[in-house]
Length: 277
Ligand code: ATP
Ligand code: MG
Image (tube, rainbow, N blue to C red):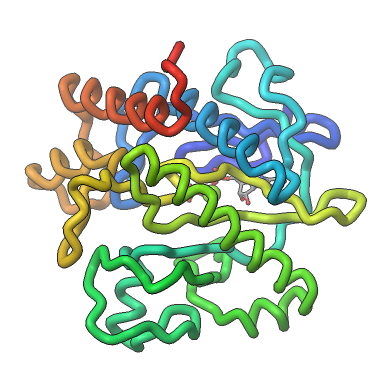
């Protein structure tokens, strides 16, 4: 199979008309891939994404062809999916303020042209979830664009439909997670067109690599929130004399174990299923 793309944590192979998305056990902090693997991370995130696709199937069709028809060596960590023509937009929904959304709000009082009330702080819950698309940069950083920019890029009908789908996916995900004590602060979706033109949800969905997960009982607006995934790795890395540029430091075993346990905990809480590796 031909390797068509290698991201920080996933590799993408072409197999005829399909793609095979393979999630590795690599972990990145501050956008730097560390030299130590977190065992089963790729499997856990792949299985979580598959579970979400099922929960969302009544809202939007997705790209999954098969979770099992993949080469043996990648079983569990890979999915076979339809190759889509991806739309050049990152479809982001936010229910809480964090990350680049927070920075943009502090600069302009709005995100992606959506005005927000005064006085919000890091972690604040927004009056209602908002749609904050960005460009999908191949080099450099993604930039906020307005809904009107999306309309100009891909047309009225598609923009309106996918804005609605993005908010519906976020709302379904956030309310499901809330019942399980997890805040989904924001999430990024990717959509493309199938060969017959059907607008289709691609990539991964509502994983900790595409979303911010916070434990609801530790939510304290006004500062950085505990994140439910890489927090141990980030906290540990900030105790080091490391300037956050490559090469990253090797992760000690106790931090690896604690991080793996966190990924499993999130999977089990969200899906209600015991993790079986
Ligand atoms: P990183 O995640 O490291 O910042 P990245 O986004 O380029 O970089 P991945 O997310 O691992 O890396 O790559 C997955 C790529 O596959 C993305 O470019 C995504 O848009 C694309 N993709 C996902 N699903 C499909 C699909 N069904 N058809 C075509 N392309 C897809
Ligand atoms: Mg990606």
